[in-house]
Length: 127
Image: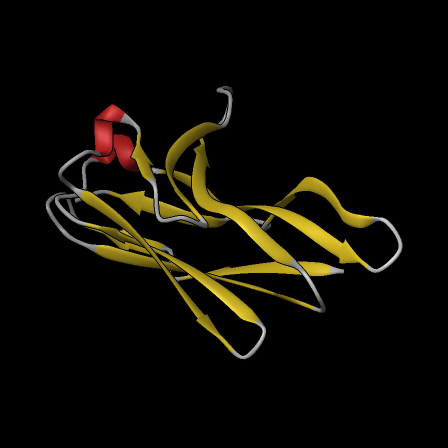
């Protein structure tokens, strides 16, 4: 069982900054990639940024140069962060943490990968 827990959303003014954090915890799992997606009512969830286990990073065009994704590991917990600068009203959305995970087993090797999602954190950019 793997859980993703986000934190760091809230209200910011245009031009301001916010930092999102996500902790992936559980027992005996391997991260293939982690990232952030966002969704506004009536629209599909869209990719914001991803980072692979090898460190490859991708951003959607609208956040390039403004957002930065990073990862960290500590005591069976994997962290992914999203530093958001120069925020715009159009960045307003619910931001969801995502992880693509495999579960190592003795008998069958690695199971998966499967997608795991956090419940989301609201980001509102408004003056």
